[in-house]
Length: 84
Image (cartoon, rainbow, N blue to C red; front, side, top):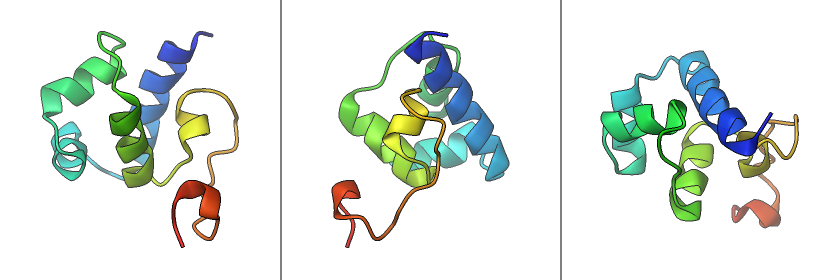
């Protein structure tokens, strides 16, 4: 499975798990619902910065979203995540 496929599917799955609409997520990350839809359908790839915003709002790791790991848990105490 390619990274783009994982990314789109994982955004959609986690967004739905959190009961967020595409519009809800878009507002939280500073974009539009149609753009979120394009990410989910693999029609468009976000910038690294936008992908980080999305992972933060969906409360998962960036590595999980891009398919680098199956571990989706965000360690909120880790300085590697830019959080203190």
